[in-house]
Image (cartoon, helix red, strand yellow):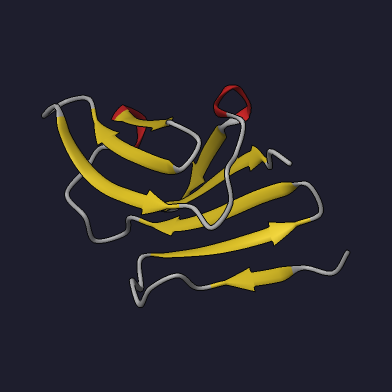
Length: 90
C-alpha cells in the first residue's frame, strides 16, 4: 500500500500519514515554551493527547483519521519535532 497523506484540518502543527498498518504523526512543537523531555503522549485510540507534565496542561489534541491500538503508541523527538506512531485497528 502506498503512503497516504491525511489532512483532517488546517492545523499547521502536525501532519498525519497512514502507511500500511501504521499511523504516523509529525508534530512540530518548535517555538512552544515546553521542555521536550517533560512531554507525555496518551491516546484513547481515537485521539492523541499531548501533555506537559511540568505544568499539567494539555498542549495539543490530535483527532486521528483511523483508530489505533492505544498500547502501540510510541513517540520520540528530535529538534522540536515529535514523531508519534501507532498500529491501526482493523
